[in-house]
Amino acid sequence: MEAQRFRLPLYLPAQGAAETEATIIEWFVAEGDEFNQGDVLAQIDSAKSVFDFQAPCRGRVIRLLRLESETVPYTEPVMEIETSDPGMKDWIPPAAGAVEASLERKPGPAAEAAGPATGVVLRGIGGYLPSRIVTNAELVQGFPQVAEEYVYQVTGIRQRRWAAEGEKPSDMAYAAALEAIRHAGVAVREIDAIVVATTTPDFAMPSTACVLQDRLGRVGIPAFDVNAACSGWLYAVAVAQGLILSQTVRNALVVGVELQSRLLDAADRSALFLFGDGAGAAILAAGTSGHRLGPAILGADSRGLRLARRSTPGYLVADSQPDLDPWIRIDGAALFRVATEGFIQIIRQSIARAGWTPEETRWVVPHQANSRILKAVARRSGVPFNRFYINMEHVGNTSSASIPLALSEIAPTLQTGDKLILCSVGAGVTTAAVSLEW
Image (tube, rainbow, N blue to C red; front, side):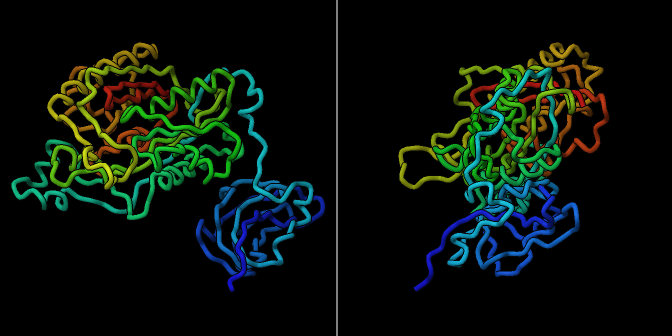
């Protein structure tokens, strides 16, 4: 009979009586990995030496609670494991004896007075794209009358990324969040709120933000989803700004994630060629140390309710709802007109509200909807098309993930003082824009 398996946290072993913390240099295991007693789980840097963190038993990694380069007190767990080793049932390392050997956490700073916020800045940005590349050549095989170059001419897209079988929205959100956290140089324990923008959640409930919270091990802080379609990430940014300026939190993780590839009707060319999968994330913080965010401009016009739509929730097509159309549907011609006007208006408003001129605006980073739409917008927005940052050619339309993904790509090229307008038009019809000074 197989021994009963149970879960427990692991702590770093202190290398000296006077030591209080150590830094994780590199993890050698990932969530789901099996390990044996004595296997090296991570390389650790302490005040006295660099040492290998070895497994005290045989088991499986449930989750990693700390990131590489993060400094961790010896009294806090770094990972959760599952094991059947009976000797581990009462195991508590000496350094952790002052705390209960569990994964319970006290409420974070979000539950306490956050202190006055003088402004909101973007501290770090990250993105994730699935490994599978889907080209126009692959998709047009089902449409003998359509050439792959024609798809590029009408959409601006040559390829997009589609998620692997078994990959979930929360998996992509987690990967993007880790990159943003590393880029921001903050510890997971410093995150006070998680806001996820998505139209393709893991579940109808609980929220994908709560799933992500569990993956990060950041229990006790607010976590919730926002759905404003392609404008969702900017709506989530606006919500996070409000939480920070109201002194509810100091640091917020804001994620946009979409898994749309499983919601595309293979016979519907109006949507099939457009959409890709991916996730983008950012750390927003109170203060002035970072890239300054201006006020958000948000709007919606329900007269466009049916221009882009889907009748069922989630990222999978259910078999039990035969009376509902499960696919993403768009009215291309009408949406082109509405999106063009919406982009023009929101870009002009955002530039004016920031106190800039179109000539001062270094980049417009738009939702990557369709290149023809954005070229039409550029002709009337006051900002030339060569200052619109476009990456849809290789990622497609990733809905709420598109702006943070584009921002994560362009970030290494930006100079201090560069002025950016982030903007979107999405199903609803929603509109959103935020100014950002690098």
